[in-house]
Image (cartoon, rainbow, N blue to C red; front, top):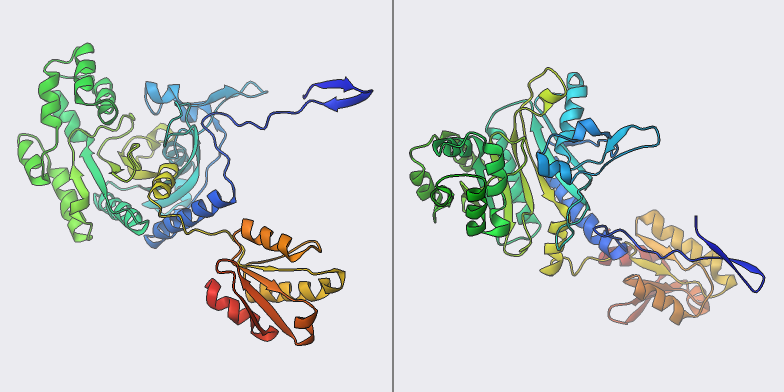
Length: 438
């Protein structure tokens, strides 16, 4: 409760600073216009490939979320007790809540089941550029089959999304957890999870630092291991380098990608790719772009055992999460969202009290025609109404004064050019339609 103090015999409420928590963000109308545009493009691509949308609760029993991501993931998970003493957790990602949903509803779902999910997740991470504590993920998953066609389809979706969003320079890196486990076993490493978590830091800290960390946890020949995991200049050369290991899964994946028309120049086999989450079991993905030098824009992979934590059924799944906030940031920094406008396309002015019925009639006509419009709520000088339209980036202002009413005309001002044109009132809707893509 806000504090009170007394001044001049009056009780005054102390103002609360309008702050937000670090790692969170307010989104103003211009921000949301950009986000809505990008999200709608991503959603349409998901649906083009036959994925249906679901949602899962934000509040979860802590046992659903904790223990699925490894020690580091658990540290970053927001968990607390509610007033009833129940242990709750906010979703760290959307994959575990999805696995729980499938376990609870599998008999009602078509198996294999393809879903997409666009919701907020929370991580108690250190905020930095491209990394927030509260952010959106856009997930796709296929569950209920081990077919590698799934992985190839996801690669097709990944490249489609980034191409249609306008990214020119991006690379889908991929590896197999089974292959990585086999390589680590050849070095005599039995406990692979701690080693994988260290290797997962490669993009952040560099090769030398990773070698030092591996030495610290007792891994012999760490330098040799990292050299073996380093990708060559071509995928073929990388496969040849690992000829002593079973790379059949990845070779079949590349063949399926070719059949689906996935641009192979956008895919790199990178044996050092080590998704740090414990639940990955097969092929995994990460997407990077030189247009967004602040980490992976998309990541995910195959998981075989998640649903079995919640039911007796064995549902293997594979999916990726698109980092929506990072994608938006990259598109903004490269100027790809500079032309995104706000909602309204026309503002109907109000001259005086007498003109209100006429202005409302025009406003209604525009709305019925399907043109995003507004009417100014008060009688005011035109300059004030023009300033309002300019601040809201409304491209057209409809003016209807006494002279226009007498001739049954309207004057339309183009706010970008400043030019005005007077036309018959009956032509107004079609005139605006030609400019507003209705």
